[in-house]
Amino acid sequence: MTVAALHKVSMAAKDYKSEVQTTWCPGCGHFGILNGVYRALSELGVDPTALVSISGIGCSSRMPYFINTYKMHTLHGRAGAVATGVQLARPDLAVLVSGGDGDGFSIGGGHMPHMARKNVNMTYVLMDNGIYGLTKGQYSPTSRPEMTAYTTPYGGPDEPMNPLLYMLTYGATYVAQAFAGKPKLCADLIKGAIEHKGFSYVNIFTQCPTFNKIDTIEYYRDLVAEIPEGHDNSDLGAAMELARRPGGKAPIGLLYQVDKPSLDEQLAKIVKKVNGSPDYDLNRIIDLARP
Ligand SMILES: Cc1ncc(C[n+]2csc(CCOP(=O)(O)OP(=O)(O)O)c2C)c(N)n1
Image (cartoon, rainbow, N blue to C red; front, side, top):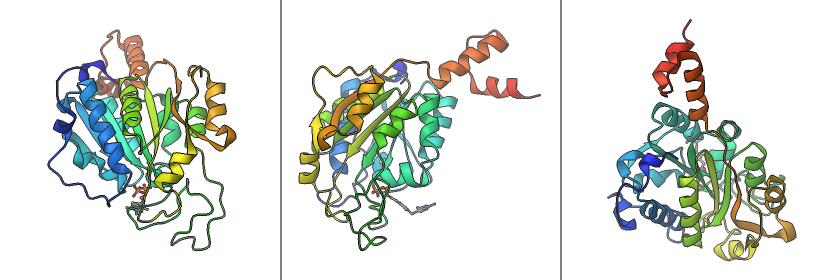
């Protein structure tokens, strides 16, 4: 993210709460993630007027309403594409996307690899509850075959996708995983993601007690294992090995982080080459592209 938005204000976590009442069900894991976001913003001193919270559609995509900042509640699956535009038009702002596994990997799946490979300077928090919550419980790309839902009353036929392997494969430069039942870890990893320059991805397991009856908070607690000390998070191969869930355990912590030029930096270099000016200005780039 841009350093300009960070370490600007001194605000308590509760000051990032908006006046909008949360609409999630009692016991929903999304609350833990929202608290993690508040804490991360407070610890980083993010200026709320220099932050844009962007989402698609879903229970998780209601997140921006609850944060006291600029926000865009966009179309189902398109948050990342809109966020890419916002980041390029206003590289001085910090961009935070949040949304569900359905939003990000079903309808929005076509956008995910491009945000990663282009290293768009923003943070994507994927709230992974293994189900479509808002539409009252359908099978999602991260659902386990054992899960019964309206669309799969006898269970599903598919192997669930692995979001971490996907993001590592397509070149995300910060890849982490957390669990909503550990809000401090959520906060630490979201904080690291916001500080990171380039595309940062945080996958967070979050229980949906209303519609997903098998991925309970207890299930996730047993599933996750902290990344062992000594893991070299600059080693892509080691990160991929962890993402494959050795011993059946899903790693939580920072799997991978590397420093690479972000998309806005790359575009600034092109502007400098063509125009002689080092200043990044999206309008100038568009002008240069005109015949
Ligand atoms: C174009 C379009 N197709 C389908 C929908 C219906 N729809 C709304 S939210 C959603 C899925 C929500 O699931 P997820 O993104 O996993 O978030 P959750 O509600 O579980 O947090 C769907 C299919 C829609 N709003 N727009």
